[in-house]
Length: 149
Image 1 (cartoon, one colour):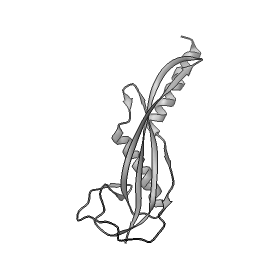
Image 2 (cartoon, rainbow, N blue to C red; image 1 turned 30 degrees about the vertical axis):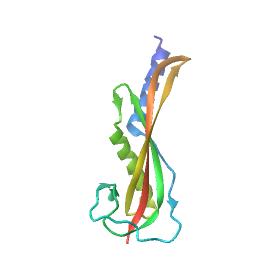
Image 3 (cartoon, rainbow, N blue to C red; image 1 turned 90 degrees about the vertical axis):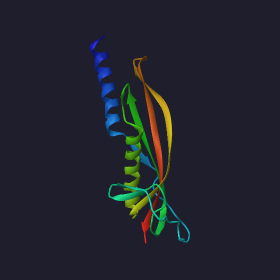
C-alpha cells in the first residue's frame, strides 16, 4: 500500500468518524397553523420528556394550549462496522433540533407526531477501487409546536 493510499484511507475514515460524532439535521422550518384556534384535545394525564428545557409530549398534553404549527426535522446516522449511533440516540438528536426550532417560533412545548426511518449506502472510493460501503440511515421526526394558554 502506497503512502498516498494510506493517507486517502485515513482521510476517508476521519470524515466518516466526524459524521458519526456530529450528525447533521435539516429542518422544514415551522409551517404555521392558519385558522381559528380551537379547544384542542387534552388528556387527564400525559407522558412527556424534557428536552432542551421544554416538554416533548407523546400524548395530548394535560392542559389547554394553542397550536403554533408543525415542523419536521431529518437527521442522518453514519455507521462504520460496529461503530454507529443507536436509533434512540439519533431520534433524541433529531428531537432536540425540532425543539430548538419550535422554541424559536415561541413554543413552550411540542407534541411528538411520529418518526419515519430510511436506509441507504454510500461507497467510499480510492481512485476507482471500493474501499468500503458505509450504511447510512436516518430519521425524520414531526412535531406540533404548541404554547400553553
